[in-house]
Amino acid sequence: MKAIVLAGGLGMRLRPLTDDRPKALIEVSRKPIAEYQLEWLAKETQMEQVIFACGYKWERLKEHFGTSYGGVPITYSVEQEPLGTGGAIKMAISQAGGEDLFVVTNGDIITDLPLHRMVDAHRQAGEMTASMLVVPYRSRFGVVKIDKLRMVRGFEEKPAFPDVWINGGVYILSPRRILKSLPETGDIERETFPKLVTHGELVSYPHYGEWFFIDSIKDLKEIEDTLRPTTAG
Image (cartoon, rainbow, N blue to C red; front, side):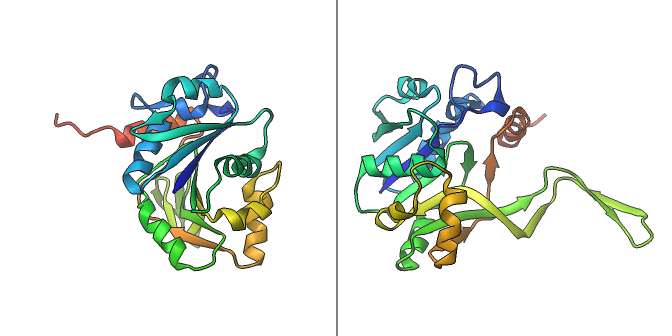
């Protein structure tokens, strides 16, 4: 199995941290996001190859990881101009080749998803083009609870909504089936997935465990606070 890490974004909301590096190299508790991802990939399933789909400051990725990490070969699929997630995945799959499944992950998430179970579920689903990780929606704001008389009855800090799901940014793709649906330029979320839904070719994998999305300085601080080991006072 091969994995594609989408690491081509500019990381604008993480400036100035991304002035001289791609978002995938931003450190969380002194370790780059991409290292968390590569360790997770190697732990969860047998990786034949990891491909960074990259563009902005991609040379920094190559300087950091070289041609392998933890014994797993690493290559770089470099965009000369922004292709969007769909175009980047299409180019990476075309360059890497192979008939087995591809794992694709956004380069700005950290999760404890049991990836091997998601892969097994995809295989058991039969001739499915893609599987998508979905996680419960968690509000970025505190919720105020009011009654019919408009009296405030309580507060809940950033609640999760277990019946409302969002795209978790990890996909299992069957390469022969997905390539025909991927755009040369454009996002897989907008250009490809709606078509797969129409034809019943996209299945979800719900996950209630840890899932962190790092898109801003605030996100970075919150995940560092969450991951920091508790010490006795």
